[in-house]
Image 1 (cartoon, rainbow, N blue to C red):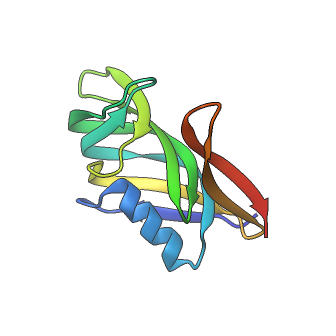
Image 2 (cartoon, rainbow, N blue to C red; image 1 turned 60 degrees about the vertical axis):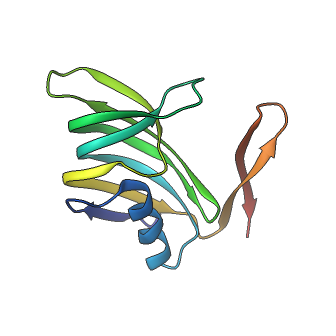
Length: 132
């Protein structure tokens, strides 16, 4: 299995930076296997809620995981604030700004294509896995 370790630097926006790292490698599908680091601000959407919540930092990324595809990402993250309070949810589109570092491990899927399609049962665009 091929893996790509990344370090995102201060000021980078998490989701766009991951999408760019994927494109830079010539990939269109990968899983985020693990991620840790720090954020100066986070935007998460909690389960069943329609809107994102903005969390002021500093924050520690305790875990980051999900899928990346040419037409979107599905990422979940748990963060802790300076008092150790932990919250988690869906990673927002923009505004998850790296404070000092983010150390992330990507696993590309060269034999598979990850896309998203509307699923009438859930009401959301859900993962579609197709062989190349």
